[in-house]
Length: 370
Ligand SMILES: Cc1ncc(COP(=O)(O)O)c(C=O)c1O
Image (cartoon, rainbow, N blue to C red; front, top):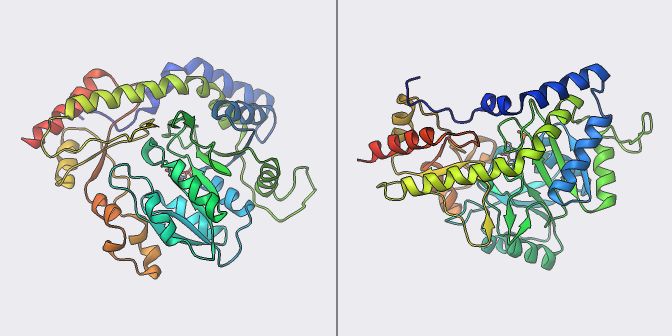
């Protein structure tokens, strides 16, 4: 790496800002051997439900499980169809099949990368049971339109909030619109553990109970297996880490937004670069700052040669992945997702980013453009 190198994210820099709290919390868990369930897990579940304004929080092993647990507990039957976006991480769609359903993809709208509600209704059939919108990159999906369709057709909604902790739609926190909301605390997420971790939130007590049972071998008490379930647990060490980090989430989010605003200003006039657009009424929490460029791969290589790490989220839109070849989708079925997959590039963004790092990234991008 040279002088201007910038990592994509810097988890160690974040750790150093809260080192004492993290080290103490980890030592406490080890001292009390509260590795599975116990006080640290219960505490985080209650703190997180307060933070996101939900009545119940069911923690689990990771964000993928959180989607699976939610959809399974909503009672998907074989043949049921679930509509989701063409642009997301594979967890969003693979868990629909895991839960027993069939995925039906919808294109994204041209500006926000989130599911285009205008297209959802045309995909609804007598077999449709639910919708999984994703608040992709940290920008809320159009929840008013999505909830109106869900109410009209009596569909459940599971919000995939893996990239959007504390994002708001018309002033209201994401995750508070649908029947349930799933979260990932993968280390690089806006709220990240030091390993795998996830949670589902809901205001529905019955659903919360079914999800908790399913995640814990089908029972809430040892030996009491009401149903067959799975083993998906947030462990005590991760819960303790998350409790130390949670109070910082608001200020970390603000810093992400400041970095994004700085990029917006520095890159506004850069030829060939399209900066992210936040639609009105939406508060973007910038899990990722995603630009577009016609020569995306050459730009990524140019940045890489200067020690600036980038990521493509994601190089192939979901319907075009080999695992969905059975659906026989063509580029014209999802023109926005298809077009974007070869143009998008996520550039470094993290709360601890220095102004020097932001300037170095923007300068390297501008240098490519000329
Ligand atoms: C949109 C989305 N959904 C679900 C997940 C799954 O989370 P996890 O990696 O914790 O299983 C992720 C994580 O990358 C994600 O970005």
